[in-house]
Length: 285
Ligand code: PRT
Ligand code: ZN
Image 1 (cartoon, protein in one colour):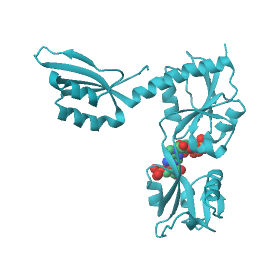
Image 2 (tube, rainbow, N blue to C red; image 1 turned 120 degrees about the horizontal axis):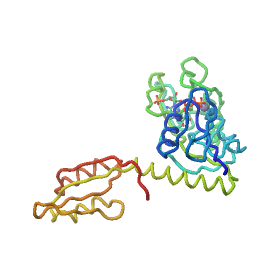
Image 3 (cartoon, rainbow, N blue to C red; image 1 turned 90 degrees about the vertical axis):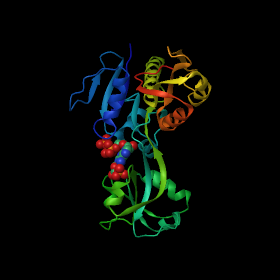
Image 4 (cartoon, helix red, strand yellow; image 1 turned 180 degrees about the horizontal axis):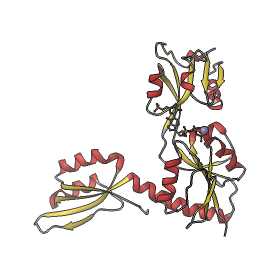
C-alpha cells in the first residue's frame, strides 16, 4: 500500500494550522521538534516538514505529493503544480506601500522608483501590466524597513492587520493579490495516491464545513415557523419538534458562521426565543 507524502511548513505562520487541520481529520502523527519526516499512525500519509518556499518545487518534482502553503508563494514560485483546495486560513494580501507623507496618484507613482520585495515575479507582472519601469530590489525579509533605511522608495509586501506598515511609517496603496493557505498537488499522482488524496479531501471538506457553520436550536410560535425557515435555509430543511406548550415548537438547523449575527437579529425579530448556538465538530455533506 502506497503513502501520500504531504509537505507542510516546518515552523512559521502556517505550521500550527496545517498540523491542526490534519489532526482534525483524525490523522495521528508524532511531532517531535527537529524531525524532518514522520509517518502517520492511522492513515497512509507521511509528513515532510519544510520551508514554505521549497514546497512548490518539491511538489513539482514529487519529493512530496501534495503540500500546504500560501497562495502568495504558489504564484511567486510559478511551478507546474495544481491548486487543489483553498483552506481558509492564513489570509493576507500582497500590497504596495509607500511612505505615509507621499501622495499616491495611481500605479504611475512607481515609475522609475526602487521597490523592495520578496516577491519579484508577482511585482514584475504588476509593473508590466501597468507599463511601468521600476527597479526591483529583492530582499528576503524585513522588507518594510527598506524605505526607512534608504534602501528603496516603496515596498511590495505581505499585509494582514496593517500594523507593521503603520509602525514603519508606510501606507498601503494597492492590493496586488489576495491570499490564503491552499493545498497544492503534483500533476501526475498515481491512482493509489489519488485515492488517498480523495479520502483526505473528503475529511478536510467535512472539517471546513463544520468550522464554517454552527448548529442552532430555538423555540418559536408555530405561526412564526414559515418566516423562520426562510431565514435559516439549513442543510436541507430544518427539524421541527412540537413543544409541550401549545402553539410552540423547537427548531433545529445550521447557520453559516459569517452570517451568524445578521441571522440572529432576523430570528429574534421573527419571534424566536431561547436561541442556542453550538459548534459543529464534523459536517458530512
Ligand atoms: O521559514 P519559512 O520560509 O517556512 O517561513 P516564512 O518566514 O517565509 O513565512 P511565514 O511563516 O512568515 O508566513 C507563511 C505564510 O503565512 C505566508 O507565505 C503567507 O501566506 C501567510 N501570512 C499570513 C503571512 C502573514 N499573514 C503576515 N502577516 N506572512 C507574513 N506576514 C508578515 C508580513 O511579511 C509582514 O512582515 O507579517 C507582517 C505584516 O503583518 P501585519 O499584521 O502587521 O500587517
Ligand atoms: Zn518562506
